[in-house]
Image (cartoon, rainbow, N blue to C red; front, top):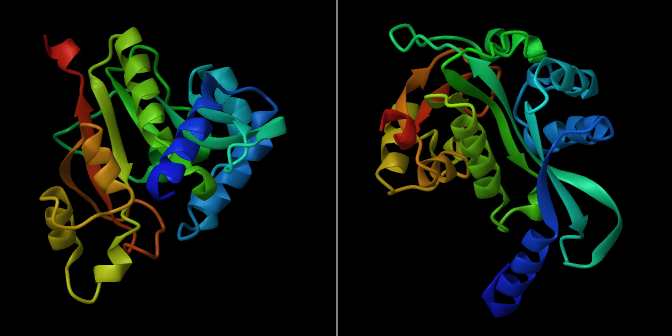
Amino acid sequence: MNGRHGTRRAAVVAAGVRIVPSEAWHAPWLEALQVTCFPDLGPQELMRAPHFLRHREVFPEADLVAEARVAPSGEPLAEPRVVGLGSGFFTDFDFAHPDHTFREMIDDGWFGRHDPEGDWYYGADVSVHPDYRGCGLARRLYDARKALVRRHRKRGIVAGGALPGYPRYRDALSLEAYVERVVARELFDPTLSVQLRNGFVVEGILHGYLEDRATGDRATLIVWRDPAFAA
């Protein structure tokens, strides 16, 4: 979306998308969204429709869904469609021993480690369908997560962050050097750069985090601490 027309269309699309807690009919859409948004991940890392149905039982606010009522062109849709997701759950997190795998943390996708009394929100996924990117939906999903954290008086959000932009620089930079340059705003990463803009900081590299051929199974450990909680 470029120029004045693109900006206007993005605004129309954004206005036609709402962020809502998941419903049962969202589940197959969310499964398809995982496949579309994470082509480099191993299939065992992706959540399926039964996972999303289970999330609603474990924690009704686990899956925050971007539900579109307009097409990418801005034209009205006959039926709404799922175009984004922000998912996670409450848990405790040991920053002295941060290493973990994605699958163990999310209980193979079932969110069985959800603890209503946990201090932290563990972010399992933020994803936006490629056709709906550039409309501010990622920021709205992050904002919805932050609002959830504040509403439940948690310390903040912790997550493992993918690095989809790294393969472009893999031959020239180590992953650690790449992350440093993205943090310094010298390079752009489609995921990490968005996370940084939304107030996250990188607190380390997670090795063996998930099967991701783009990064050699590595991810960033990212954290957002709620200033209101600290105050």
